[in-house]
Image (cartoon, rainbow, N blue to C red; front, side, top):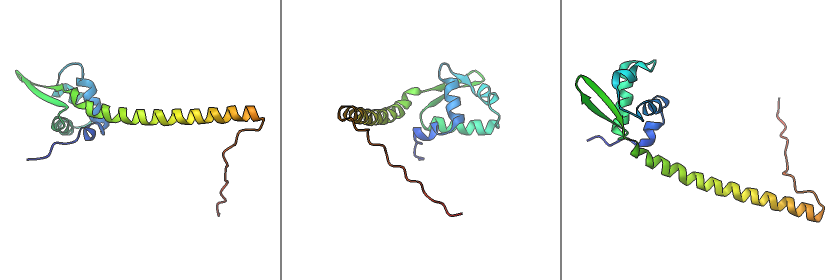
Length: 126
């Protein structure tokens, strides 16, 4: 039995993200999806297979049409991961902002200019 692919693998490719965008609101047949891209039908089938292995797409046969339906609940894993780092970096930037504001306030009250970051100019050999 083949291991399921990771959701992050699926969204790493811009074509797969575009496919998810196409089918997010309503199921779309495979031919309609393939017509929207300048790649072979076989390439689109491979992208759809990867999306299905990740649990982001399910196929449903309706008459002669094969419809692709998005299962976006799988993107919660991505959302949680991104949210964690969003909070981490927001906290760090807020701390930096507070530090810089405190430095500016101290320089105004003491009458000395705030410390400027040192800049080193490197000499390159030609």
